[in-house]
Image 1 (tube, rainbow, N blue to C red):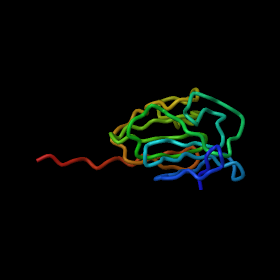
Image 2 (cartoon, rainbow, N blue to C red):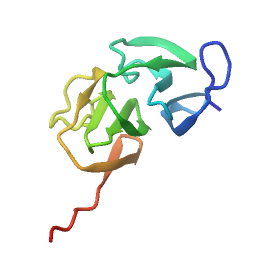
Image 3 (cartoon, rainbow, N blue to C red):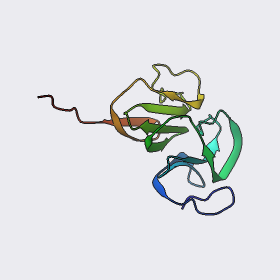
Image 4 (cartoon, rainbow, N blue to C red):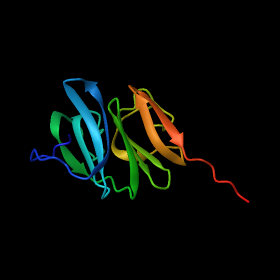
Length: 142
């Protein structure tokens, strides 16, 4: 169950994904049916995507506004968060030491959601620093 900063359950959650460093300090991201994003846990690499970096652990979820319209899918990776918009664009925030931000490098983390160089994505998934994209089916032209 996702709890807000007041300790109350976040209602109308349509998708939730957990990740993070350790079992006793999980991190995650949740998407509500109104498009609001909630994040919690470790933010030491800026994975909350709200422009901040903090070594303090956030047990309860905070609302973040990445400025990305029509988010349809979320994923929490190893020190990263990913969102997919309705048009198939992917945005990532957090650690990039293994190239998990999809920007062609292994330099620097991002504390804001940054567009990844991939399109027509339906969903993001993964384990640890590995991330995979499920692309939308190509439309047949007649």
